[in-house]
Image 1: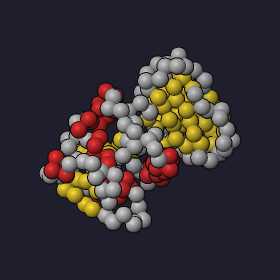
Image 2: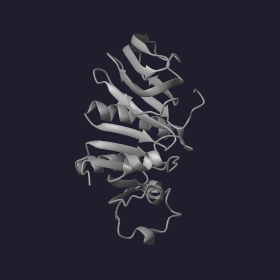
Image 3: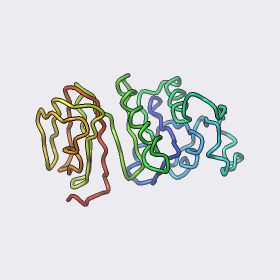
Length: 217
């Protein structure tokens, strides 16, 4: 078991694709409220189940009687997902896979997960977000990021600020030392030609990829 890799099971949309199953294999897991329903499809046995349990009332508690529960009141200052992440860090997490972090009914939660991933990466954690069909990674200044994306699959770069010195290699539309204005759509819907390497001089961004989407091929 890789003791410092934790999968955080969140309640957003999740498709248990082979790619996601491989990513979480052998990781430790913590479920955030309704994210517990994603444990079995991914072949994971969480060691902790946290939250106010308002989105898991349909789950049979008896089916998870061997999982430690950590209840929180509904009126709290953190989301169940952030509580789960805090618990993973207390247990020594250095790499986080946020499964179920993208899509679903709550756009505010999905956006918060993207923003939180940037903050966590700035603190030195390796963070990967996935719904199974979509994946995301923080892109921070001074640290090259290489992604093993299938040839022909789509990916985009979303800037949370103006970006400077953006470089993209291994893509149909490469860039070198490019300045991207905040809010620009210039880096939407690029196409991987194999492994993609990205780097940035200043600014904060995330890379959002669709490894099973070959519509740009």
